[in-house]
Image (cartoon, rainbow, N blue to C red; front, side, top):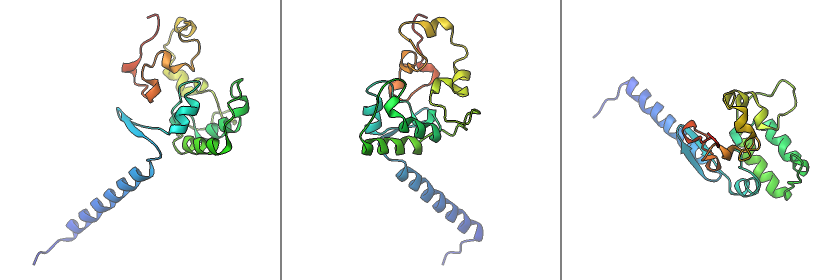
Length: 168
């Protein structure tokens, strides 16, 4: 007969609890494709990728808070000067995906959801060393053109080692 002390029982229970929690997080997060870049998990959804990615880089959901994604999806008929309207079911699917994986950023001080990623404080801070000549380069055109410098932006990888600034 084996005897197990109280600490061993606690350790086994803790390991079982953690294993169950990890398993449920992994199962819940598989809405589409999910892969890792460095220490950041990149999520994907086929409709989001095809609809949003048909005009520009499909910006990772973590780049905006949920309130911003809700406002963005509610105004697709005037999406930065373009009618980007979607079928209601497609819009709901993409909106749910974006909100589920949205970034933790707090609401901007103005109180209304910020729609331009390039105007968020974290974006400005991350790009403050980019010279004006890079922003004005015809290959860049706009701060929203992430793929001009971030060579793996299409796959959600924005690590510094993958930055190649045009004209540099």
